Image (tube, rainbow, N blue to C red; front, side, top):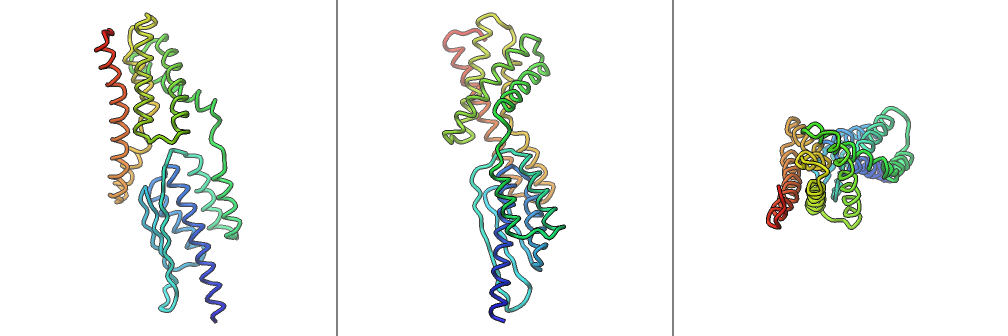
Amino acid sequence: PLAMAKRINQFKKRILILAVRAGELMMKSGAEIYRVEDTITRICKAGRISYVDVFATPTGIFVTLDNGDRESDVFTYIRRIKGSNTDLSTISEVNKFSREFTTTDLSVDEGMKILSEIERKKPYPFPARLLGAALVAAFFCVIFGGDTVDFFIAAVIGAISCIISTLLGKIELNFFIKGFCCCFLATFLALLVTTLGLTEDFSSIIIGTLMIFVPGVAITNSIRDFLSGDMLSGVARLTEALVVGVSLAAGAGLMLELWSMLGGVI
């Protein structure tokens, strides 16, 4: 009986580590709280664990497992979440893995291997991300009143801003400073091309470029968390989105003010 209990405890521990690993990948990729908690619960239930209690926040995951017996051991695991971005591809892959794990005879070791492969998966190639940033800036510029010339100027400035954002990300600057610097530079470039006479409407170019960095996913997830009853997570993500928005506005506003003080025409 003692050896049997030990094997059961080891299995519970491995299931717990697997489930939290999956939840961590989803949380770091920008998944909603209810989706993270549901994925962890499903994986643990697939391991025939009777009692599973999950509490997730944008900065941590807390999981407790119990078989329901008086003499059974209770396992609690806490995982600190540091840093996050938006990676819908990773969220989709982990969702696919959780469904596969709960409906097939996939072992824990095989599950850990799959999660490791998902984590090591390279993001979209940089040229593709660069093109995406350029198109986002260009088309939003047109939406806010830009013409054909503004479209191409916004595309170039959007691409440059994406490059700067990637470089700043490599030195691990926080999202506030990174957004501030990128929008500061984008506004400077928009004002510069206006001064050179290439365009007359710098505002649509600035707005189009800023839309690259607007935290739309964070705002959407905060609302979904509120609707799901996860008030703590909703407030945290909404606050993060507001702080990012302030950094973008501060970068653009400071550049406009400095340009005006130095005698530039606005």
